[in-house]
Length: 80
Image 1 (spheres, rainbow, N blue to C red):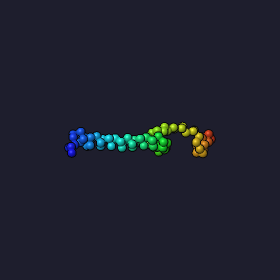
Image 2 (cartoon, rainbow, N blue to C red):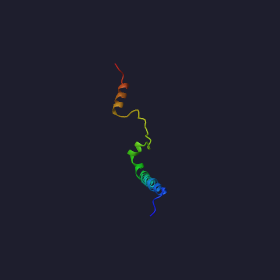
Image 3 (spheres, one colour):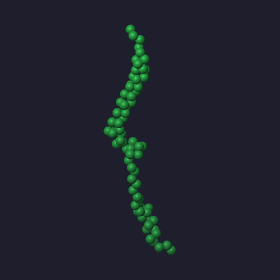
Image 4 (cartoon, rainbow, N blue to C red):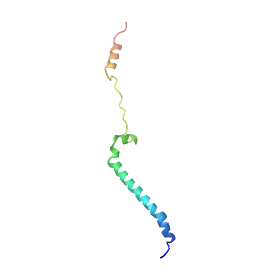
């Protein structure tokens, strides 16, 4: 029976673990990419966290409600 060579040890202790780790990382990255494209990019909370949706600011109208109408009518009445 032969004793293992240096290349056998190199393959067993360095190459195999690196291949296993890279396989797991690629597997996780693939499923994360699929989940992102199919589901996560459409969730409003995730869009807000990653700044994917631009916030549109609408200017407020001059007369918004009853209070503004009340004060405008007060200004038009002459003061004694």
